[in-house]
Image: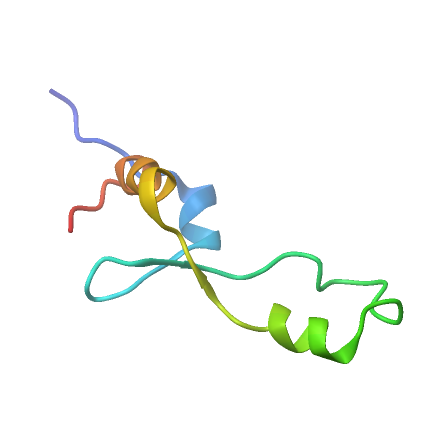
Amino acid sequence: MPKAKSRKSILNRVKITKRGKLLRRQSFRRHLKSSKSAKRLKNLRKVKQFKGYYAKKLRKALGVRH
């Protein structure tokens, strides 16, 4: 059976921690910032974690075990 390849497009967007958690950046922070409040922009800076079923699917696509 051939070796499984990881999805490079996902690897660029996701950080895998030592314990196997998948972290991502938030969207809606590129432009049109003047219409967004400072509180909203501050909260968008935070890194989010993939959870549940979606995280399981991403781990499979990346070939990561936990």
